[in-house]
Length: 253
Ligand code: SAH
Image (cartoon, rainbow, N blue to C red; front, side, top):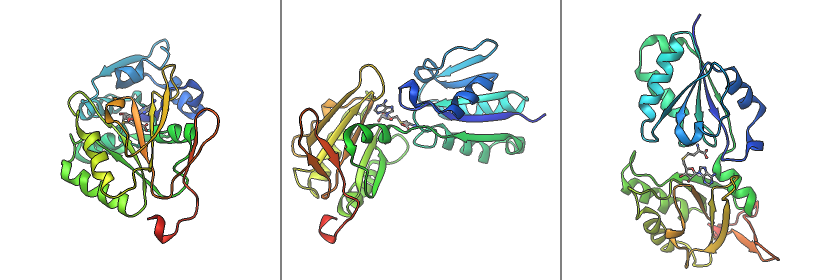
């Protein structure tokens, strides 16, 4: 029998955001692979082995999980949010493309999850209501000047931008530098949302503007959304509603 490998998105935190399909895949697995804090969110099941690895070991984890599935096991690789968004699904595909031919015969499925940008956007209103893009600020896998080109292109053509991986211990300056870059193109009043640990007990959502946005307010568990010229803030008691209208004009780009 050839093995099975499911790449499972478990959402950003709230257990109610785990889909029934993801739950079933976790239930059916003989072995779980993943970054420790993600695996910690999956309740232990009897007779299921667990293989934790560090965040930066995506390729090794992908290869180990494929090799395990190739022995005939049902393997689930766990990702936070959606596994296709800056996560394990692409690492698994890379490993299959460059790995032994037997890996291509495996039954591989990718099970979607709620990505952090969708959860943060939902908390704030509808900031992704018109065209948007997602950018990882990690320059581990791409040079910083590529990030700058993408920032310029996104801001000058009217995209709302969702920033994943805004900072880490090894990357302390990137978000401040990205804000500086965006201030060249966008008004100071452009809404900025910091969504931290959304769906978890320690969740915070802060709405501010580009002129005063403080990069030091973000950490590894934060997703930042920077609006476009069209993004609007509706003041109301408590947190404002932030949204991007469905229609665009040339002036809003
Ligand atoms: N596959 C994940 C993203 C992995 S990259 C997804 O689809 O959400 C890791 C980054 O995702 C973090 O640095 C942070 O920017 C964001 N993130 C993940 N979980 C989050 C949460 N609960 N709240 C806010 N941002 C989160």
